[in-house]
Length: 247
Image (cartoon, rainbow, N blue to C red; front, side, top):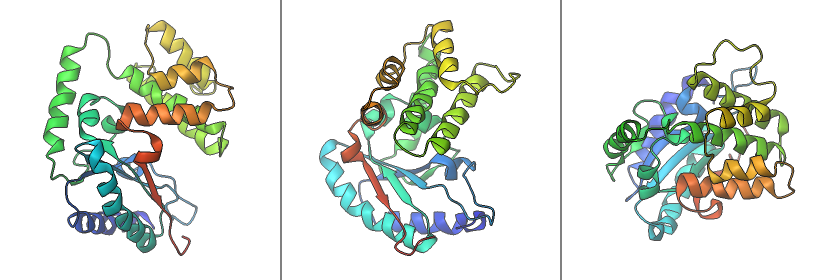
């Protein structure tokens, strides 16, 4: 799939998701932001990331059954790995400053029968007005520690690169835009900012920062991240489909 195929991808998703019931779905990740990875020939190598929202844990199984054919048809038609992280509605609305939500572009909703969009916008505005400390800082640290943990498990080059990108977002948020090679020492930067700003990290970040070399650090951090972001564990939330004919 090339950049020029993205409008067709979005049309396909909106059409397919219109056939589902009880699920609001937002486009997330690099395809939504436009900073996706591409090969030399322009073929997009990043995954498609969707955030389906369901009302309660009891709705997860039905959502998975409806979404799997959508993910597979999308993967096959566009030659891209299609992923989803099913998220509980209450969790989404209670963590409006989570990085996976604040990094979405304007108008990310492909389907919204649950009317999540206006409520999420209101919750985000309220969070910024009512919390004395910067509510974004723990959530900006979360993806850094997640990708550092993931780098201990698989594809260290890609995942350390993602951690560096996330660290750049954190530094930019704090106004540190003039640093030379600011992300050469990502872990040291995170701990320094945590201490300087007296940040209480989320449990997933705290787990990595406490024991970054533990054998099970990635699986533990991953499960904590899904609980923090989606309100349910990795196994219940995560879905993926790969092209049956490779891209």
